[in-house]
Each structure stands twice: as structure tokens, then as C-alpha cells.
Length: 358
Image (cartoon, rainbow, N blue to C red; front, side, top):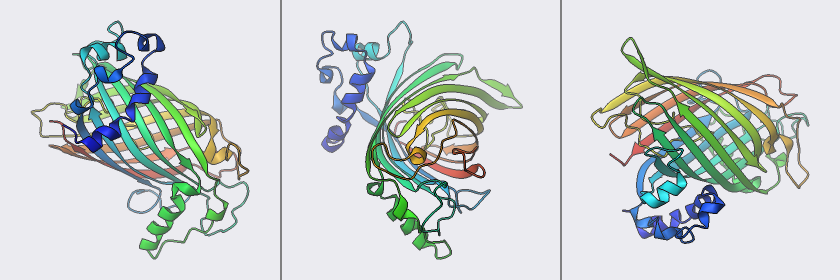
């Protein structure tokens, strides 16, 4: 059971749940008071995750750079809401879902963006603008796993935060660089984006294929499509992940800082298995209509560059779990995001998961 402070914190999920439930269902008897169906004291913590992404030493093994999307860090909690059957049938109608599972997520994340040469106090106007993004992410998920390993997963997310100086991106980057005397001191933050309230909504649908077996290793495929809409990002995307390994978990893909994690299950594939390990590769593409970190502020005057409408990424990584602890590393390569960008970018990622649900 959760203590009273956790219960108050999770009241934040009520708005996103009422957004997910179709309006016609919200008018049905009993739906006007959500707490009649969803008692906060039944919610349990599934897992906690920590993320660190960077384009420099200790994370990015192929390059050591400080440019563009230069760092991301965050923490994320996954919860089992233990919905009643009545509420579950409204959130995942029986016509479309069989034995659905549900999850809630709460994350605090920060992105840091800089120009190509951080020692330049007045970067060129055609360079990537400096900017930071600090936000809370509230997510609701539903999933279905079939006996043959196929399944589907829906992710709904509402991000609320701030872009600009109040994101504390400059302070965090300066603090990290001061810890390592060999690092250059960032000089261009006087040109960063202005403060702006950030609101973004994300939806993504993932499917899972049947498991195959080759040489004693399991493998499956996870195609996904989704979109973001808000004053931070407006874009559509598609991706496919292939996993190969031992004891593949019964989830819908590895946790991703710039994406999301599966809140509907723990990392376990089989409670009888103490460990699992797998490698994966993800190929994805975005069609981008708006990116505030390139296009500049919505209302205030700020630096900006012309966006490339098509951006592709490829990620390779590995995750290993022993009992309730999981660690993962990945490397991402991305094509150019703005017209005057001389070349693409690569960065590395670390993730650690601690599971509380057994």
C-alpha cells in the first residue's frame, strides 16, 4: 500500500484518465466520480527507473561531443492501479481488448541542447539554439498479451513543464563540466530560448509479434506508430524494434528516455527465471512539423533554424536483468534535424530499473 503522500501525488493522474475515457463513457452512471472505481490506496509501485543520456564520455562510446541534443536525465516510477473490473472495461472495452493490463507512469525529465561549439559565447545564427526542457510526464497505458506472445500496447502521455532558463539546463551543464576540469566551459547560454510554459501530448501504439527461436535464442519484433502534439513538438513517427536473447520479458520493448517504458508489467518474463539478457535494434523515423528547440519560442523572439521535416534514427542496445535489478545501455545515431546542420549526431544511453512487484 502507498503512504498518504504518494496517494496525494497520484491524484495528478485523474485528469489524464478522464482524457483517455471517451466523453460518452464519462457520462455513464458511476463515471462522474472516478474515485468510486479507483481507490488510491490500492495502487502499488511496480518499478523505478533512472536514465542518463549524453553525447560525451562515459555514455557515448563512439564519440565525445558537446553539441545539439547533448544530455538528458530523469527518473520514472511505474504503478499498478488495480482498477476494478467495471472501470477496466471502460478504459479498455471488451470488443477491442482481452484480459487487458494497465499501468501508470510518473517521470521527471530534463533535456539539454547546445550549439556545435560550446566555447563560442555568440554562436552563429545558423547553429542549433541553446535550450533546456524540464517537465513532469504523466502517463496511462493499457496492454494485451496473448498466449502466442502477440499483443498490443497503448501509451498516453501528458507532459507539463518549462522551456528556457527556468529549466535549469545551464546550471546542470555547468555543474557537470566543473566536475571534470578537462571539459570545456559552456559559453553560449546567454542566447538560450526564453522561458515558456510547455504542454505536450503523446500517443503511441505498439504491436508485438510471435516469438521465434534460433540457436537457442528467442526473438520477436515490436512495430510502433505514434504522434506528439503541443508547443514543444508536433510530429508523427514510426519505428520497429527487434529483440534477440534469453528469457525475453513479457513487455513491449526496452525503456527509453526520449520514448517511454512499459508500465503495465514488471521486467520479468517468467517469475521462475532469475535472469534475462537480450540485445535489440530499433529503426525509426519522424515526420516533424514543429520542434521548439529548433524553431524557437512560440511567442517570444528567439534564435531559430530551419527544420528538416524527415529525421531517421537507429539504436542498438543490450539489457540484462538479475532478479529485481535491470541495467541497459544503448547507442543512437540520428540524421540531421535542421538544414544547416553539417552532419548527424550520436549519443549513448544508460538505464537502471529496480522492480518492486514480484
